[in-house]
Image (cartoon, rainbow, N blue to C red; front, side, top):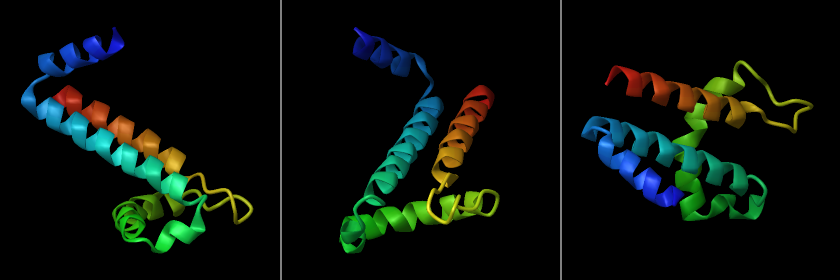
Length: 96
């Protein structure tokens, strides 16, 4: 039932809002995959992992300037990145 509601919700959105939503959701998925890849350091040198790191590192480095890794190990920048991405998406959807 929820899949049906999500589909109806996407149809009711304007085309610009759909593009904004899909871009932000896609980037959120990239961030999630990047976080998962950090648990498997041997995969970091695979081609797909290099592409994901290339796309997400500049965004996360921006947040690392404000919140450095805690104890040199625990990186909170992805959490702040997810929050900022959703905030940006909501702001863009309000004004489009």
